[in-house]
Image (cartoon, rainbow, N blue to C red; front, side, top):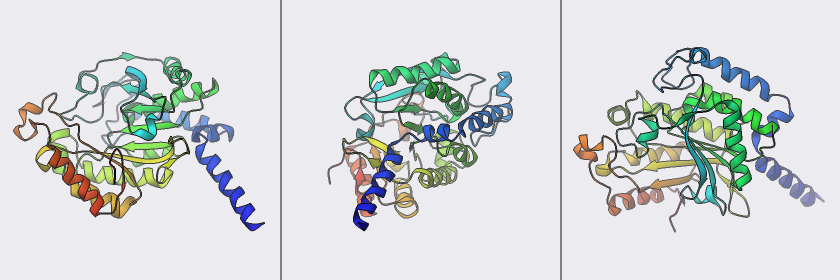
Length: 320
């Protein structure tokens, strides 16, 4: 009898974890207040750690170059993301224009730095989410959402009213405010932050931001507190949890060991980690000789070995 009860409770827990979080908030009548809080925050914007304090409701623009409405570059089922996100029908990616980082080697610089994209209303953004669901995508994957998260939440309310029921993936460069993340608790199902650098000085040089590693560590801790380690269902699809990305840079510039050590010792050895090998010199990388070449396979393998050394074994695309 006790075992039957335990199995029942485990089943209930799994159902809760597989149910998109924002639908629980809507059911409890708490989502409206979240939307209001996010929109009000635009009046003196501190939604990201840059804290520009411009009035985006009046279309003033800070470092992210984005006023009242979000801009979208493209949206589509994506099959190049992490395997638990892609599954067999693709991850429903929405690429937002502009970014709160200024990475000199950005591979999507036409979108993030040059502003390629079009402005969308909340209703249009909601329809994009619903289109991705109709196509059959497993999730709604918000790419570079940090600077437009208020607009996303505004649209999510509309989409949910119209039947959206997919998990939300917060796919971020990792320079995120703790206050904003706390406002997102119970809305985001899967956090997918970059951990780009293991020191602040390198981050300032190549991404133009103060204190990246310190901010990034606090943000990732908060994300993990909210959603825990990645949960993958019986079909291999991610339902809830944390995925971390770390891009290997040439010449050890990302200070990868500090990143790996932090994940293993202060997040979880069960973290799902993607050690990315696709660095190539883009945008302004040729202005920095140390960034002006692709990484070698040996450089990537060294970071994989570091992850294994520190006990992290859930590595995307790596057979152990």
